[in-house]
Image (cartoon, rainbow, N blue to C red; front, side):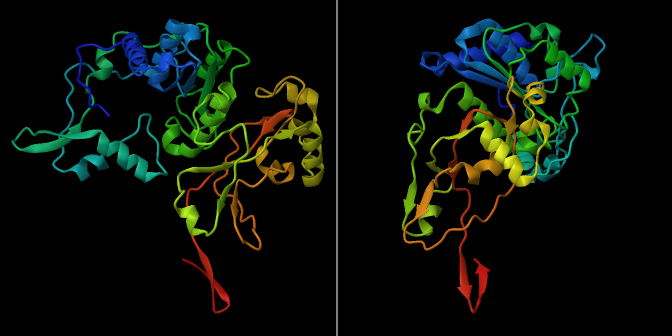
Length: 365
């Protein structure tokens, strides 16, 4: 971060022009599928300007926790420093990393992400008393050099699809700001809240954010139009002769199931089975008034329904006598599944370990 040169002035329009230039240089507009732009925080403002400029040339924009000032005296942009500020120079890289902070301030449960961000934001620079030290790469006068700050004019309608993602613990997305955005956003626009996440969603809940974005992009641009390593229009099963074969596929998608229709009858039967007759599942009229539900439809979570909806296995161990569903780790249900939706399972191998029988007991290796 901050490896580009520093300028005498910055503007949102400039950021938007540069985003368009990158898209043009990389051939995104030459594809048969229009590009989708995703912008987080300050980047969401430039993303809105790109949408105002290009309109229907975009497949859509996704705005991630972008807080707009609601009035002239909104405190979102208070504390802008005057020009002439300089970064402190630290004797060692470790001392500099220890001073890394998020803005707005928050804790981080994934220290490896914090460490990566801090390390890539630092560089060697001459120290005042000779020698080199470590300092931040980004322009210390960045906010003082911005010509115009974002305002509610950015909320004007655009001619492409819009989706909004927020962290449910975001300090920037106050109820007043959320109300402002909701009033100026089309009712049909996806409004996705990532649980247990602050403003820096990719730091707090990176996997949940990726899952939400993949689900959204799949809805906007069906996988049949995209370049996947497997044919998404047909089920695929990864067959292996030994468990060790799975180790070679870590980080890769290994299979995709058939489509499964989640109809109201299935949701009702699941409610009966679990004794969970919450209105969002079984009351069509009440569910239609929910902010994320389609008219006259109830919603369900796909996770508990998965075993009952006959999703075929996406991988298979040849010669195995029995397979057991061990359970779920870190499950996040970031999107409702509406009655009438089709779902399918796609498997990705993240980690593999072996368990063997030893003197009547089992030991994990």
